Image (cartoon, one colour):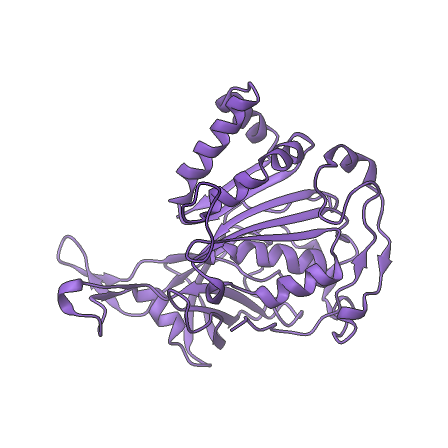
Length: 359
C-alpha cells in the first residue's frame, strides 16, 4: 500500500542542468557551471495536480529562525487534525502521518524538530509523581504545512512497541507512551507542543545546492520538508535548480514512506531527483548479505565522493545504528583513494556540508 499525497500541488520541471545526465551521476564538475539556470517546463504526468505556489502566505519566508519558542513547562496547546497510517500490511511496524493544527503560533524552518509532551504522569527515581518528559520528532512538512497556509505542521511517527517472547505474541510487553498517544489520537485530540529546536539539518540558502540525503525509517521526515519546498512549493526566493538524491532504508516495499510523492517528483523532475532504496528483507548487497543503507550508498561511492568534493551537502537522519556501518564504508573508500578519513571528514564539517541527526 503506497502512502497518500496529502494535498494537491503542481510539480513543474526545471530544465536539466547542462552537461548532467538524467541521473546526474558522473558529471559533478559541471555543478558550478549551472548556478543560474532556472527554466521551468510543464510535465504532462503532473498536469492533474493543481498549483500551490500562488496559495503560499509568502510573508512566512521573512520569518527569522526560531528556537525554543515554546518550552516544556509552557507548551503550545494544539489539536490533531488527522492521523493516517502510511505503510502497507506487510510493513514491520506501523508508521503514521500526523497533521497538527498550530495556527501559525510555532513557526519553524525546514529541518527543525518539535517536541511533544504526552499526557499523564510518571513516578521518577525519587518516588515523586511528575509529568512525562518531552519527546522530539523531526518535522515532516515545510513551514507552510500540508495545506500551504502555515496553519498546520506534520510529524512522521512510528508506533513503538516492545515484545517479550515469554508473554506470547498477542500483546506487547511495553508501548512507547508518546508514539502510541499520537498514533491513536483522534481528530480534535489536544497536544502539548514544544520547540521548534535544531539547526543541524537546516537547508542551505543556495537553491542550486546538491543534497545527498540518507535515511532509515522515520528519519525521512526532514527530507519530506526538503522535497516539498524544492519541488512542490518553489517559493520565488527558493526556486530549486539543484540536485537531490535520497537513499532510503526500510525493511520491505510495504514499509516505504511517502513513495507516491517521491514517484511524482521523479516523473516531473527526472534530471534533479533520484531515489535509491535499501530494502533489507527483499534485496541482497554485493556480498550476498542483506541490503542495508550503507551497502546502497557504497554502490555509488565514486559519485557520492565526487559530488561532495564539488560542494554537495550530505544529511543523515534515522537510527544511530546506521552510522557505524556508514562510517566504516567511508573510511574504506578514503583508504582506497589515499585520503585520511578524519581529515576528509573535518574538511566537510568545516564547510558545513555534513549534517547528522540520529537517535
